[in-house]
Image (cartoon, rainbow, N blue to C red; front, side, top):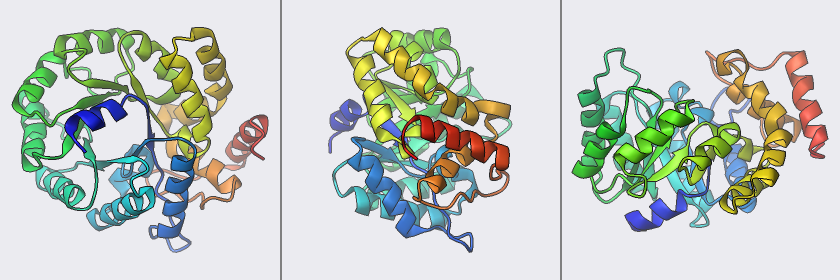
Length: 301
């Protein structure tokens, strides 16, 4: 797959899949394959294993490799795989090279979490990763509003394999400015805060959005994409309202239950266990009930 191919495919729903765990707390490869299969069968064409919804920061490097292998094998060419990488620079480079060697179509680079991140350092961090895998597409994941179009453009100038940006700053005005300063048509701009942010971001230049909801109902995520692509604002907002309750459960309390809500829904649907790793926690009874109400309203239970 060429850089242009993945760039075009990013203009879609990018499903960030959960990482199921078994009763002993290990990665459940069978359930992981089930999740990927149902997402792809539901119409998703780009899958991100080892993203935040996949509990990236709670996985060991060996576990991220297992998850990536299962995802690539299960997708089997039916969808592009955009593997999450990050942590310290050496770990990120090793993960990117592993992804390149094992069938990934690209890597999504998690926002560096170092407390002393400089703008120059952000560019340098991503450049080292991109240079390590010159034939693999690279997508930075931006969560810091300090990262502007100047930094993204500098990175793209230095690294032709940087094909898109997952932008997750909750400010559509900032998104519009950053995308235009970096080059709106130069890169594929993916709204990184899922369905509730998608209409606002599409209005100012996004052509794709990430989704954790797609684990539960890929069809709903694809429906929203189709409405946004057709510029059917009324229909898009009807779907926005339809999924709003679920997404607000995920966003509550500083997104403390972001992954727990998705896994609870999957547990109620019999797809995988509800277990999450610390510092996250499973939902209490009230939370489980609230998820069940949403699933029933969607006619999934």
